[in-house]
Image: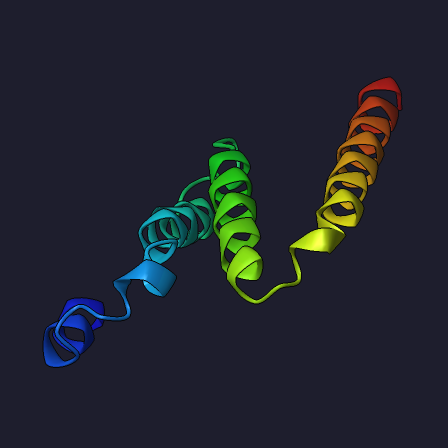
Length: 91
């Protein structure tokens, strides 16, 4: 669908839509994570690729000045996951 749209617009929108090529594999990793056994941690590369793609998309929307808050949120999320995993291993 993306290539059909770009072909129809003579690839003029490619300067704004190129992060889609980063976002698509990220979403694919999320889909594989939900379809695969839970022992596989495919959400990690999915999260990384999705965050990178969203960061590039927001740069074009002039919202990129909020990227420090995104990094803080990711850091808090990783800390909470670590604490939750440590508690389940202990008890």
